[in-house]
Length: 364
Ligand SMILES: Nc1nc2c(ncn2[C@@H]2O[C@H](COP(=O)(O)OP(=O)(O)OP(=O)(O)O)[C@@H](O)[C@H]2O)c(=O)[nH]1
Ligand SMILES: [Mg+2]
Ligand SMILES: [Zn+2]
Image 1 (cartoon, rainbow, N blue to C red):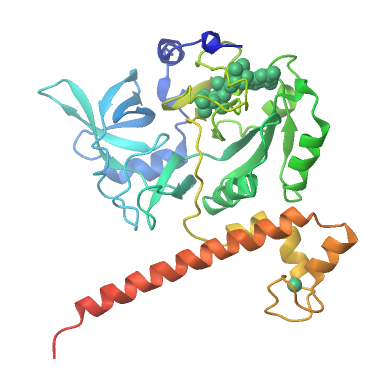
Image 2: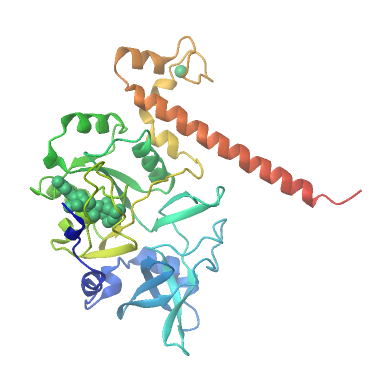
């Protein structure tokens, strides 16, 4: 395979929005209307952010998809600590017409209820929103790629933190790699759906389609070359997104997708494709970690010491389960690693707040 297998282009997705009711196709419903209502003053028009690339933005309005102006990085009226977060794909926004340039200007963002956020790779204590207003996320992993430690669990924690249902998808099932499939399943918490698909022979897509929330948005995340855009094309039934060959030496992707993009499937159901992400740092833990590690947490309740770290303590039920072969060691290790990462981050936040507090104290 070579680079020349890149197919699809942006025009193809733009055409998908050529519908009688684009807002409905983007998932407009009572909940959206209610969230956006306070911002739709002074003749403002509702829209959904449908595509972001290199600072450029496309908005879907009742008239279809068109380029807009996002004031990226300067969103207004977010009434929480994400006020300096740039617009994210999937956001519902209130827009005004920029008369001089005949463009739509996003001037306010509806509060996000369900979203995927990772640690901003360049600003450690800030969150970067990868996808907004999504009910589910496909955590995509290609079976021909090495399973990087805790990568899948990280995605699942991030999903739960944003109240998003994770669905793990293994791609390239046609390559017949049973060991890789088993290793992946060992990383997944009980209760999280996992599906194996192949764009070559079409297996798994009926099962996957049945898991997508109807009338809601499902985002896709995973490394470059995982097969995210290929999944979107399979579910649309046509090659609307470009897909790219992976390097033959190590099966690494070449970052074919460069935009975050909403793709309508009909009836308000949407997919949200993203470029491959290498880093998936956690930003906070408000319970997502425990939800992503229900098995470890349940075992932990039986440890002899209430503050057991599941590392080398006597009477540790987690270590006992690993020894008995009922809990994969990879699960225990990932849990400890991610918990340490969150504790480290909490410490940094505390330090910063203390410094800020000291700075504000009036001089004696
Ligand atoms: N054999 C096989 N190859 C697949 C399958 N799904 C995707 N591929 C190939 O994997 C490569 C990468 O697929 P993409 O869909 O572009 O991957 P992506 O996750 O969108 O990658 P980025 O856009 O770079 O993040 C392409 O060459 C696809 O043809 C599959 O089920 N089986
Ligand atoms: Mg892609
Ligand atoms: Zn323990």
